[in-house]
Image (cartoon, rainbow, N blue to C red; front, side):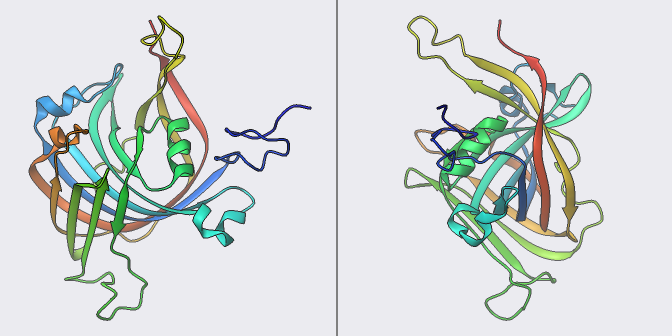
Length: 267
């Protein structure tokens, strides 16, 4: 009898898999800060197959409070399997002349989201993440979507604060954050452990994220702050802001059941 399941651990019935079979459905509340890093540092984070953007320092910081489920939706009534938070930094580049974004750094606070990200090429690490919530009621404890509403997000990794941002809303946005339109490309990288093959990965490929059934709420924007804080075990502070643009708050949903391989990067 063969073992079942989409991901490890594969089990006799397949119910033990950390990541269920696609499709995966997502909805989340986002805080986004558009900003610019040192251009040389931003370009240094671009993987093989991605060329520098004409505005090479252009980046975005994203904090997302997610809820997700598989096709059955069973995770929604077992919330510890559906809810998670993450923060990430995207840089800008070009693939065959087309504008793209690259997820250069990302932390997440649940194991299933980390494993699902690795499958898609997102270089996820575990962190402790907190994001201001709004429940649509207003009042002292609910910032709401209105002028003056204040939102924040923090991230710590290995007990060290590594990132924090704030967004103070001013008005609905006409354009939204600039990272939303270009597709995201990543590198799926899975190394070998065999002696003599540590630098010859089993998988090393440039991939493009594919999603469908996308829905977006009204987007609000306002003034933003952002700090990427150095830590001995991290390099994300190389992408610290030299100029900060606008901040945004909105909700976003979509479904994933596909991934496009652009090229195999192995020699």
